Amino acid sequence: DTAVSQTPKYLVTQMGNDKSIKCEQNLGHDTMYWYKQDSKKFLKIMFSYNNKELIINETVPNRFSPKSPDKAHLNLHINSLELGDSAVYFCASSLSWRGTQETQYFGPGTRLLVL
Amino acid sequence: KQEVTQIPAALSVPEGENLVLNCSFTDSAIYNLQWFRQDPGKGLTSLLLIQSSQREQTSGRLNASLDKSSGRSTLYIAASQPGDSATYLCAVLYGNNRLAFGKGNQVVVIP
Image (tube, rainbow over all chains, first blue to last red; front, side, top):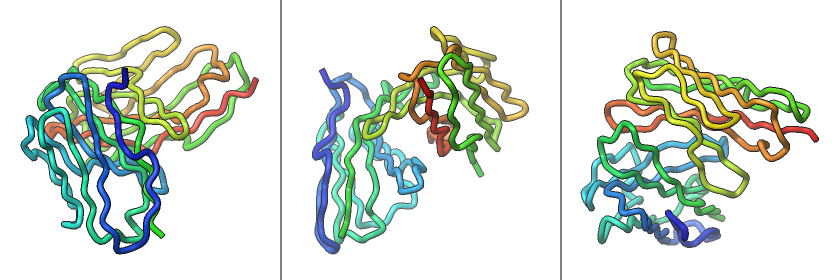
């Protein structure tokens, strides 16, 4: 069973398009995250949700809008895609928001290429 | 600023040698430090998690140490195997619940 799954795995699209990436976790965790890993392999947090509520919103353009319909799902919608959005986007989850003894479980990543 | 640095960025070792990967962080007010493994085209897998009050953690051939006062952690992998080839990421959890990552140590173990 896949603990954290993401769809699609690969996404190739034209500049200016709108696209969504879906994430689901079957671990019963309360907290979910979106990370971006750029071409230099630097992994940086974008958003975090705890029980469907937005907790962390880093300095991310408004074109990125996360949505959590329930605590097992955290989707990422991107409007007006730009070349600089090309990256690998990782979804992750953890048991709770303030757990210092817990690790985060990562999905396999979605490789986005904007042409 | 909460920065995490990993040195060296890449290294190759012959099979059987011990691996030593270094991580340093600028802000010592950490909750925990974690080491992850990332394989090409795959997600991250947690290897070891060290609480801020701990000095080290061990799992099989892996041992990670933490010196919070000097802002350093070291991951030791004993008797390396070709299957250990991967990128190893160090991540530090701060009180604002942000996990700050280093850029990784890319390891190749040569058979």
